[in-house]
Image (cartoon, rainbow, N blue to C red):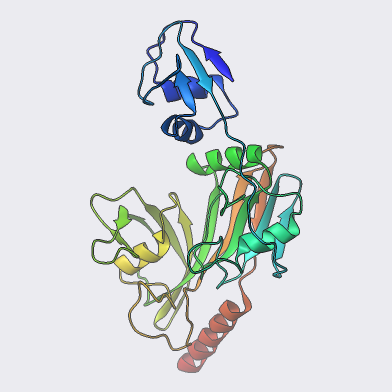
Length: 306
């Protein structure tokens, strides 16, 4: 496609294209500039280049490569599905997309078997349709896009913090505050590159929590995040001395229930349907193992108070 700059607006190249091409997100435009698929007067320019009147911008959008992922018949709890999106209740222990060490047996393999017409190609060959993610051992709601338009518009909502995500977490210790906000930047740990940590030079990370119930030695929380940093809830809760039960990375010591993998569940999502604009509210019940642990805690509480 071709765009001719009709008047000099002293606007950055990426911003100018974004204002003229609603089908391309700013991040996609920046990737196209970096890859040399966007030329100004047949020359490669930086995204910070200020467009001039008479400039001719050529945009080449490569066709999305077909994902070479084998569909697998993995049982998945589908909460909602239409022609544009599918929302699933991801079980604990299931990796979201293929990667080194997990070439198959992932959520994407399962979704490929369900969505025979394919998924959005924006996520790349290994992450088709994946708009956001959940850690392997975090269960709950996950949105997958079936086409590029739904993917782009859903990603914009997430970027603009218009998607409301509510998690349920069981943490160690008795949390004193009924409600609180954790505002601590998160970045890659300098001691262990596989871990994240609270760092002054990290990216903004804001977590809100509310106590649902206190047990002897444990607290059940409702958690809402404004930002979606890697391992955000797990890092923040560990930082304030209340790590998520079962977290094998950010918690030291065993738990009395023998749970492996964090007791963290993405319970609900509120968002606008990317195509119809309908306000969506979806919920996923707590996994059975989570309910069983809470039942045991309630029994222990009754014994200690009787």
